[in-house]
Length: 327
Length: 234
Image 1 (cartoon, chains in turn yellow, orange):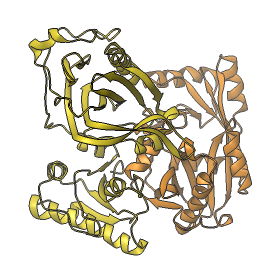
Image 2 (tube, rainbow over the protein chains, first blue to last red):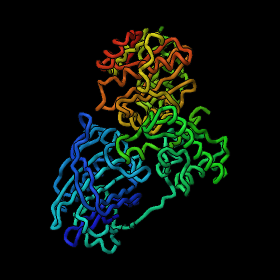
Image 3 (cartoon, each protein chain N blue to C red):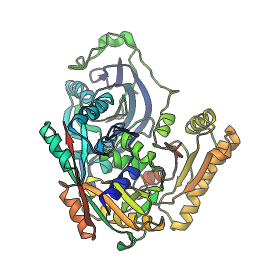
Image 4 (cartoon, helix red, strand yellow):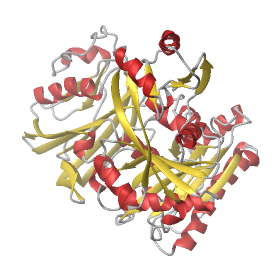
């Protein structure tokens, strides 16, 4: 499997080769913005970052990686990044990065596009100079049960052409070396998935194994308890799960950002959860009895409340399965 | 807390996937949930000839031969030592009256169930993954996840469950950057408050002997060492 992480002028293309078939799970591109790239651990209450500017291109990929460690995923990618002329700025492994605080202080595409296991991830930042100015690259690598996840964030001159995915026959143009040390260089079986509406999103598995899932695609205005109009992929998936198993019961838990009094926020967060329940009942005909709705206000933020981005992440609803293992 | 009561609370609040008696032994299928839910115990008088039976059961489960040695198991301890088993993870149990600890300051903790996503994240960071979450979900009695908060962010988590009138705390974790800032202390106070609200009179927990900082904290809260056990592993 082979794909073009980013292309950057004829001489400066960066191509990353993964050991197996990968699926692109998420993309975020901003033409010109500033970006705080972590270049050190979270320590003493702050994350060491460098403010860089340019076109930001952030992408995540998922691939089957039964039995591999994050280091085994990282090593060949690191070699390729080095071969493309990047110099290593910082590299760390979960706990030494600063764990939880590092993860939540770092710009990561939402679940399920990108999954970061707080106990098992690796981070790498690198830079190189190009004729048009400096280019920065960061990789976050993590894994779930038998899947690997890689997020690549590239910040470079705004003149950079839009990233593209290499067609299989363009494989000969690959500039990086083949993945050294990667297990079984899976014969030139090259299939590229450009954008991947995936029908096996991990929600059901996550719920039935006792996990909680933040419904990251839901949108609430600040101060509003009503779910914005529109179709949300997470609700389609949740409705399918509940319809397939009428004995399954879930609880939706609403959260707010930290604006205002706690009591008012608890009420607001409960309204958010109820609004989601209502949507599931009216649009997907899920029986009301399968869904509880609760709210906890601003007590459990997942991001800092001192930026609009953080507050947006905190205004959310998450879902958990009730009655696991007690039947 | 008597050794028998302690054993019962441990089994009920941190249960094996399955447990069954074979001869004098209680065999536990831990389903990957760690030593406490996988170790065999002697439940009736036994003889040296009975040991291979327990070993075979554990081998059939794909688990290492592992025995829990409690107060009064001195003969078993000696027999396993003679058989080449080594001592693993000596553990101390602590307990105090649930009303000994005042409720924590407002908004420093948050008890709830089922666990929110951040509770999973904090546990994962501490190495507590799906197999141990499954242990928590198996508990049939009252239970809660307790999150602690510092500077408007969750920074620690624990699991507490009830058996009879005794609550036991498990899986206490604080994110490394926030250690020694009161997270665990707040969680202990919150666990005691939760236990009282459930009608419990005792709060207990177990900790490895080697975890000196945690033991210092429990002692500073007025918790007393009420029991000890260790494992013997082949």
